[in-house]
Structures are given as structure tokens and as C-alpha cells.
Image (cartoon, rainbow, N blue to C red; front, side, top):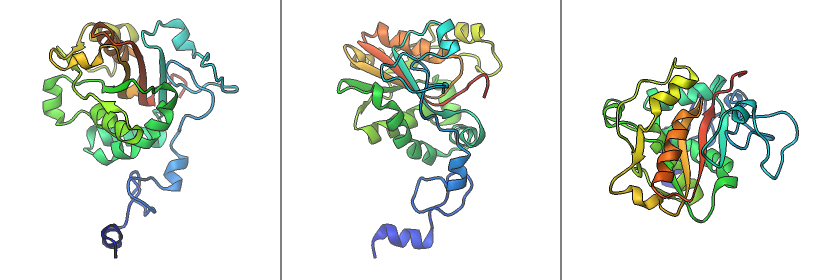
Length: 241
């Protein structure tokens, strides 16, 4: 008997969301899958927010928010909307020490990120300030970046960017306050940020709301010499969601 088969005989795989039995590790059951708002079809080419109508291969679609607001990155994607079971998964990853959710998200992120990846791409997570990292013990965006790198085969530079100062928690802040809060709060690592020079950079975060965090990280990557920057979030907060 194979070791994995023996382990499953004693500890059957369970749904990451509800605990029901599933066929393989790091999976969600059919009911939870149906309650997870994956973004498929037409979507904004800058943030991945779902849009009505047919998909466009030329990447010309924009949501209302991205038409009103300048985005410093070139293209963006999101895996699902931040609601229903997706929100439960994000909160489990972020506050429940559920690192296995990041591993499950690797293939989802790789599929969504496929149009953004090039042979020259380096995957970089949005950084946490050291104080918050000390309290949380891990950076959920770094876990997602590693999972995406493993699923896509692309290089991951976990510490290429750093937070140089503590910022207020973004929850509850308006759009303008979010951008002020992150202004120049993210920089290239003084020793390891050079990996970004001349590279296509794909920034990874767990949730995109206003885009302020991605904007700050994008500007830091360009200051470090990045050739091109794209972004991907596991979940996108949509105003009408």
C-alpha cells in the first residue's frame, strides 16, 4: 500500500471549507465550490473584477473603478470575489493559521495569472511590516506567492520588497486615506531588491480593495528597475458584490 493511500485510510481528505470528505488533499467539496464566486469569463484587465459581456482577447476591458483611477501596473487579475465561501477561505488563511488554503490556491492563481506571466517573470508578494509579521507569524501573501511559483514554475522573490514603516490597518479607511496610508511605505529591499531590475514582476496579495497597496508596491518595483509590473489577488472586493 502506498504511503499516501495509507495516510488517507486513517485521515481521509477533508474539504478546506466545511470539513466534508473529498477525493484529494487541499480541495473543496462540490457544495463549497458552488458557493465560491470564482471569476470566469469577461473581467477587467487591470483588477480582474468580473464584467458583463463577452471576453476580449486584446485585454481592453476596464471596470468603472479602473477607468476613474490611474493604475501604475500594466495588467491585473483576481481569482474570485471577496464574498460567500471565498471570504471564509481568505479569513481562514489570514487569521486562522490555515496555510493549507494557500497551497490549494496555487493552481487557481496560476490559471488566473497565465496571461500575465512571461519567461522573465519573478513573483513577488506584497510585504508586511516586521512588527505585524511578528504578531501574525507569517505573511499570507508570501504563502500565496510561493504556491503560485510552485504551480507555475516561476521564480519567487519573497523578500524583494519590504515595508519601511508601520501603517494603519486599511479596513474602514476611505479610498484617499488608503492611498495616503501607503504612500512610500513599501520599498525595495536594500540587498535583495536588485533581483527586480530588468524583470517582469508579478505582485501577489490576498485581497484587493482600492488597489492602494498594489499601487505602492508597483511604484517600489519600478524604482528598483522593474521592466513591467502586473498584479494578482486571490480575492477582489467589488462595490456591488
